[in-house]
Amino acid sequence: MMEKLNLQMLGDLRRTGNKDQVRFQECPFCSNTKFKFYVNLKKGLYYCHRCGVGGRIKTFQSPLDKFKERVSNFLRPGIKVVIKKDPEIMLPKEIIYPIYPKHGMPYRYLERRQITREEQVRYRIGYCSSGNFEDRIILPVYDNGVLVYFMGRSFTDREPRYMNSPTSKEHVIFKSFEGKVGHAVVVEGVFSALRVAKVFPAIALLGKIMSPGQRERIKECTDSITIMLDPDAQRNAADLAWDMSYHIKTWISLLEGERDPGEMSTEEINTIINSRKKETSGCVSSNP
Image (cartoon, rainbow, N blue to C red):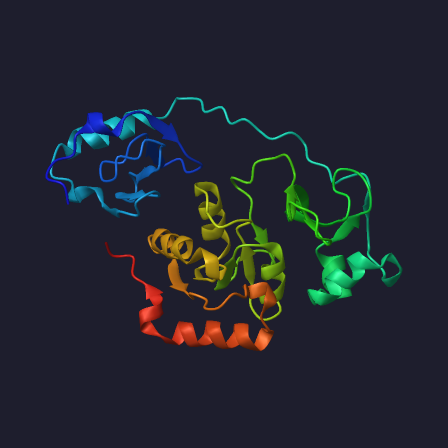
């Protein structure tokens, strides 16, 4: 813990998707200057998404009153916030849906992924045989029935494996459920979410790192989570667990080996999640 908080060392402020939260240009702990130091004045918490240091702002020795005043003035009512919206998103015009056995490779790819016809219809999964997304499975993401994002996963050896829609995913998560649930499993990709969803409600971050907007979406749709990122993202999983533990009850499952959740059997997933939730040590404390 540093002895004194110098307001000047924090640099400029920026808004986040949370009206009670700001991010500062520089972290006073690791000196990162890319606006990774987040402060929620309402909750009285701070957290750096670069070095992982977090806690309560009341632990700052001085000058706490000036610090609160600066954040409050920045967030004060009457300031109009202009949020740039993404352009309206549309699926590729070449998309073919649904996918039948006669379509060959894309159908067999979904079979290997154990995607059923019911799941294909429910999540509106299709594919493209031409255009910018040629030879790719199209995985749409909807929010209350509105298309907000989509990905194209190659079903051949074409690189890159994924091509995404030209829109921000700052506030986008993939959910296998509607409304709010008591517990959900957070994974990286849609295919992992679809496999987990066979036994538990699932959420996909669409990557290894969670944005502030995604954090708010997760808090809105579940009371607790188990984090199960791919084996090559264990550090990301730990950072995510520490972050989310300030907001909702959080467990973490650090996977061993080389298989991601999308390659596991439902029996394996069920065993991992249930055994982890029974272990007190598996729950991440929110006390700094």
